[in-house]
Image 1 (tube, rainbow, N blue to C red):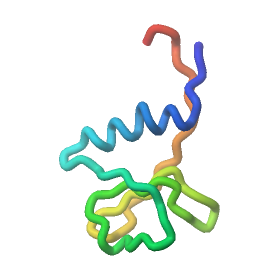
Image 2: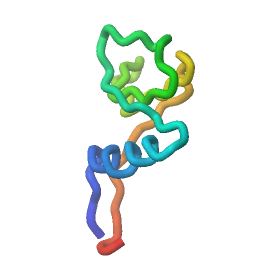
Image 3: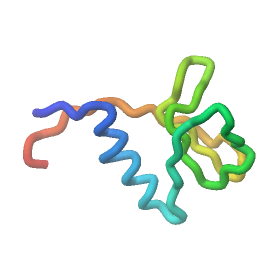
Image 4: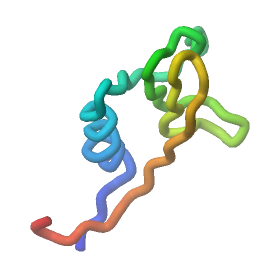
Length: 79
């Protein structure tokens, strides 16, 4: 078994799935000037929360839909 680091899980698994949805999610980085009311189908990376930054905050039509936290995973070789 090999371990997949958290950033690899985000890049190789979560980002890929978000972009494959119809409509595809737009993945953007958090910035202080971000106006979430203008976000239609967006995943905001490193979104600030009371508990620290979330890996992704999902916004639809300006409303927070949910939070995704990536975790590293162990994978079997050759799969």
